[in-house]
Image (cartoon, rainbow, N blue to C red; front, side, top):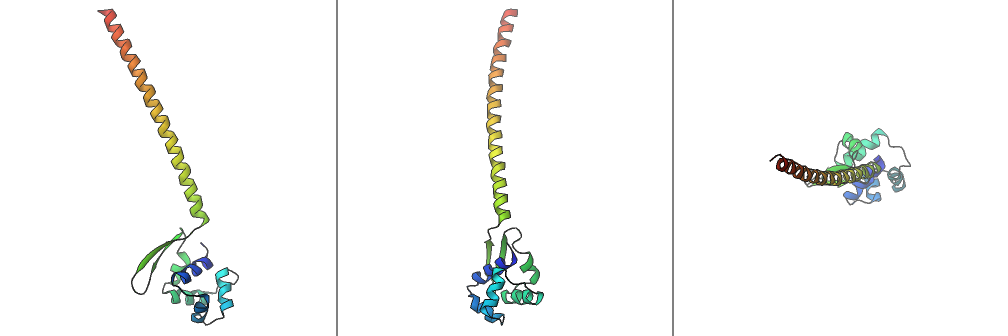
Length: 136
């Protein structure tokens, strides 16, 4: 999740409009909207201001969501986990699905091999019994 998407998600999680956020940042609504659309470069000062508005450290704002998730703790102490959609998560899910499919195929092969071994053991037991009867 890129920075502008994180900022938009945090704003929506706080149930603030773009206009309210622009007021908090003392800028125009269109200027703020450009930040959320990724059409405006965000200065360090703006990042710090945004982080302060959300009550988080600037480093948290920059790093959160690297794995598609982030944890938001609001002023009243309530805590929520949010999962963002990202290409890396989709790729990871696809990779895990392939691993599961491969493991299922391996289990089927294992079951077939076990049945084959059981059949071979049964035949060998019969051969051993037959040989023992011939020796008697």
